Image 1 (cartoon, rainbow, N blue to C red):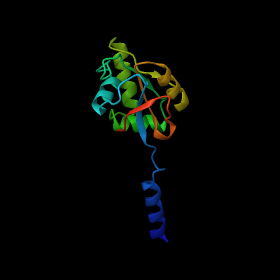
Image 2 (cartoon, one colour):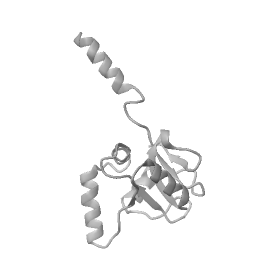
Image 3 (cartoon, rainbow, N blue to C red):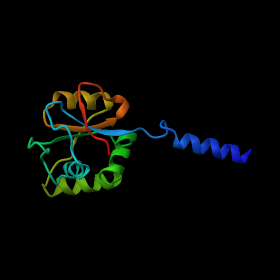
Image 4 (cartoon, rainbow, N blue to C red):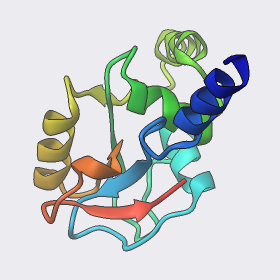
Length: 137
């Protein structure tokens, strides 16, 4: 019985439903692709430009959101506490402001769709024709 429970648990963890696939999205007028390093640099205030030269306007989902956790785990390598400390320092020293937070996936998609130069991230299942996928980290 124990063996069957372990096999069931392993198959659930390995299934596509276990983890959402996070993708980086952009405005339809923006670049068709971007590198993971470029996205990291935008989200960590090291760069303010998209590959096509447009000013980058990054958007963020709220703390505790699973897509946010997966995005930052894969792209910036930082968790919520590390991001909070990083942005506190950036703001305190006058180096920058954190990405504007969107309340949920629908708000993220609508904001990126209506803001030229914008960049965000969503679960791949939430993407439609209003935005384009520019990176699958």
